[in-house]
Length: 437
Image (cartoon, rainbow, N blue to C red):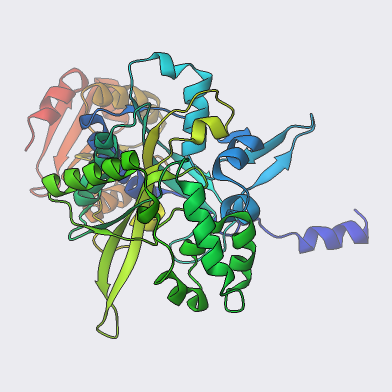
């Protein structure tokens, strides 16, 4: 090896995960799985069925749906060109991908509406910070193929039930109607005219938004833009009779279900596909200064025009919401929910010597078929070390399997509390373990 190669070898470092993208293992993995299973359970009870879409889509799927002028498309989406020349995007959100699947697989020919839930990883090139990661897991709910206001209410009800099951209390829905495609242009025109009078105080991003995506002016978080929202035109003032009736019905459903809400005239959602109902779930916290502080947990809304934006000849009226699991886990209220696969080991399985290890996997299979979870340390050899570990883990029973037991087709079952033990035939082991308290 040359001196240059030696230097390169010395400088080589162990690779680390990418910024904003974490490994999941052990308790953290189970924490995410527990949250997903609870959300899935609630969704199934309300009538939703599963769908899984690919992590990669054609870039146009998200550009046409989310819209240029949005942070997701302009700044956050991971895109690349394949060797074959295709432009692909790593999934930044679920709604556009689910609508693509709905159109591609002819789901409009199924009984409508189609109610779907999905769960998986999403990626955005956002600045990593508390509550925002570049890789995050999202649970989504979509109802596709109906204009009925009850669909909006059902999405909100299901979402709120999931959050309640997670341990959240006293949440409020901020809600607004952004109107439909017939009335939206008049509202946007009035909004642009209003903000043009204040160009000198607008932030840099809003000076761009006024040209590319005016509705995002109301979504700006910069301090200098906040006061302008108070006197900005309200989308509700521009609603058609049909849109006004739809919005009123949604509010009636919320009142009937006892879900607290506030009509927020400046509420919009970042994606271009939203129409009519938009909402956010608000949590009120008391800050260090003793004052109330509002935190947005998640949101959603209706997207009646999305299908046509993606090339469909017909509209597919739809409504949905998404829930970032990483964000949910930030909050102290969020419970630790054990997933169904988590089983507390009742037995610690000790194998002593090669002959015992040869037969040990067969015993493991006997226990698995009997649904008896076990723990084992295959690398540890001494009896004392393994008994000590079982005691530390507070596992109530040990199965001791050595060379003599391997020849006799027996095991020793030791009670870790009383230190008493019995010799049990392997054929009778599962029944014996099941009857232990």
